[in-house]
Amino acid sequence: MSILVTGGAGYIGSHTLVSLLEKGEDVTVIDNFDNSSPVALERVRQITGRSFKTYTGDCCDEALLTQIMNENDIEAVIHFAGHKAVGESVEKPLKYYENNLESTISLLNAMLKCGVKKLIFSSSATVYSGENTVPFTESGRLGCINPYGWTKFMNEQIIRDTAYANKELCCVLLRYFNPVGAHESGLIGEDPNGIPNNLMPYICQTAVGRREHLTVFGDDYPTPDGTGVRDYLHVVDLAEGHVCALAYARTHDGCEAINLGTGTGYSVLDMVKAFEKANGVKVPYVIGPRRSGDLAICYSDPTKAHRLLNWKAERTLEDMCRDGWRWQSRNPQGYGTQA
Ligand code: NAD
Ligand code: UD1
Image 1: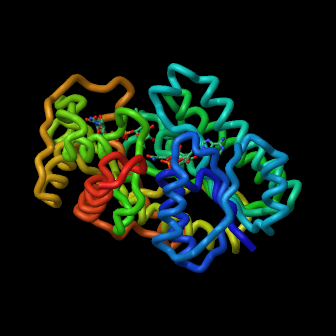
Image 2: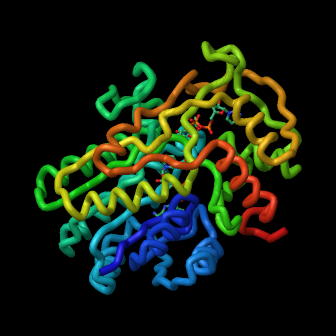
Image 3: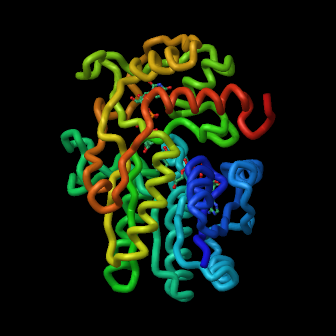
């Protein structure tokens, strides 16, 4: 039996492959490398000493997914594949609705056809309405402010309805907070296309000299130092959360939404200071205006993950900063070139 990992060459997918392979699982990958490099998969092989089958293809192709499930005795699917850039989703909403919804519908159709009963889906804290108070619990109000967020919201509903109509399915909707850092080997990590939108890759690229300075988006929020607060989570902890979710899915049915976060919030300036301290480098920054759509404070209540999945984030902020920097400093151009 094998676990099908869609989008396995991406940032979270590649780390999850390592965690699965290290647990002795057999995996099969499909990726169209739209936002990733096949080098990431070579590095996963290098870290784990394990090989696995990879299909270069599109998850919107139901016939291909059906073929993969039949050829590889697929037991469960972990579905990472999707577009994820918030700003681009506002400019090109149809690109996002088409790819992110079509891939999930094709996958569910193929699963039903092939008798695959377990699905772990990459959702996001972005499905929570800003009206909630922190910490965000799974029963909080949902609502989004951009097309990317709506694709996560709609995918959750599509999966929930499919699980309701097919009682033999078990679907776990994992709502990630802010994954950062990299595998401790420094061989795999986040490699965003173009100028990073997210804080941690921007800090790393500033420290390595690819960006002149970080712009802090607003210092007048109602937070202790005025900058935005988020729940940063080590990507290897997040990867291990998928292994726990798989164990849960193997012994349950139904559909559950579960937060994956640490439950602790750090501000933008906390992150800058922690990064400088952990790595002995400078991160020049300037204060700029707020970014539209940003919440002041967002962090999780992770108790449901602990209760149902027996999962808790273990790694510290220092681990996140140190491992993120090891990846960035050894691979200043990401998978493009090595140091
Ligand atoms: P990523 O872009 O690094 O990985 C996604 C992978 O999916 C890429 O390798 C891409 O090439 C592939 N892909 C996209 N569309 C595809 C398609 N139609 N067919 C085949 N492959 C396709 O992103 P990531 O950060 O690893 O995120 C993984 C998932 O987690 C995404 O669904 C994302 O929306 C979600 N998520 C990410 C974050 C985050 O901060 N990184 C937070 C919350 C949720
Ligand atoms: C972003 C996404 C969100 C996604 C989440 C998880 C946006 C608008 N939202 O949210 O949909 O679910 O990532 O990865 O992209 N910051 C700066 N300067 C920068 C970059 C960020 O000050 O150059 C600040 C932001 O204002 C925020 C914090 O850093 O306070 C974190 O930002 P980011 O990494 O983009 O994550 P989110 O805003 O949580």
